[in-house]
Length: 60
Ligand SMILES: [Zn+2]
Image (cartoon, rainbow, N blue to C red; front, side, top):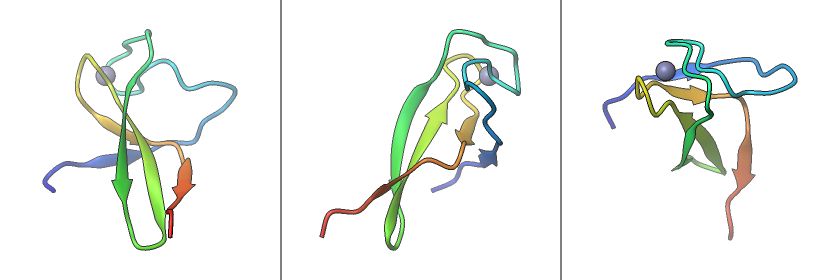
């Protein structure tokens, strides 16, 4: 897919968009990789996609 994923380090919360400052939280998306599914967050304002390091284990 043709989009950029921005890695961020989450502190106590992840609510404000680091790119545009939108402060009301995120949409989410899941992206399957080899052994895990990445849980990604999309800013509703600027559409940047963020990875805060959350993953889900793939079902076998
Ligand atoms: Zn944004």
